[in-house]
Image (cartoon, rainbow, N blue to C red; front, top):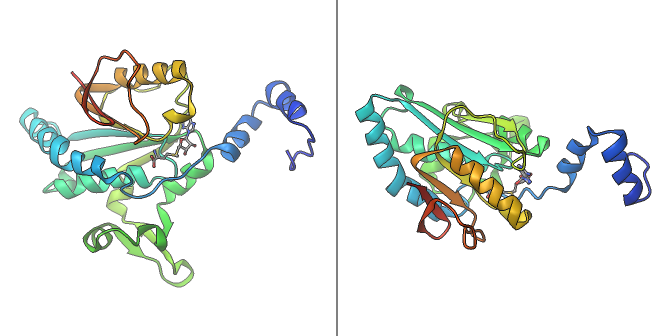
Length: 236
Ligand SMILES: C[S@@+](CC[C@H](N)C(=O)[O-])C[C@H]1O[C@@H](n2cnc3c(N)ncnc32)[C@H](O)[C@@H]1O
């Protein structure tokens, strides 16, 4: 509002809804809460590593498929999608022989720029195990001192796109093997949450898993998703 020299919310509302719909992008960029971290809610990554991926990889091998597709819905600056990619890569004997893609989507265009670049302050990774640091990050030098960059093979697995989860339809033809949609549902009312869960369900493969954030659950929603453990659900 300061940038546009608009003094009241009422006037700004009129500007966004009647005069310049493109302003919505700036509005979303300014008001969305983007807190995230690498391997946030580590139990999800343990579950992925121990309960989801071994079976998934076996099943793909049996069917002669090399394709793994996952979605970090509301990915913020990309740490979640990269954590998923690192977990998958660590389990594949020969990652180069596989076609792994993690779609990272968010409504905020600024966070997606960070996600695409994969460059982070080194304080953001200081609590990660040494093995993860050496396997998946490069230490910045010169003007990149104090930063780390996600290694190329992992960055290549992640594709970042702008997408609004409240859109009535999602533009995917293929289903995902698993979906992380964490710490975003809390911002929506019950009806919107319900509609989003239905769409996520629709784009999840049979036998695929949905991971929600720690304060989120499907309690109170009638859902065809089967409860596996707190915040983890499966499509039967
Ligand atoms: C708190 S962050 C969660 C990041 C990550 N999933 C995690 O759990 O660490 C919430 C993200 O949801 C995004 N978001 C909010 N509303 C959205 C919407 N309608 N569609 C897509 N993303 C949205 C915000 O821009 C923000 O990056």
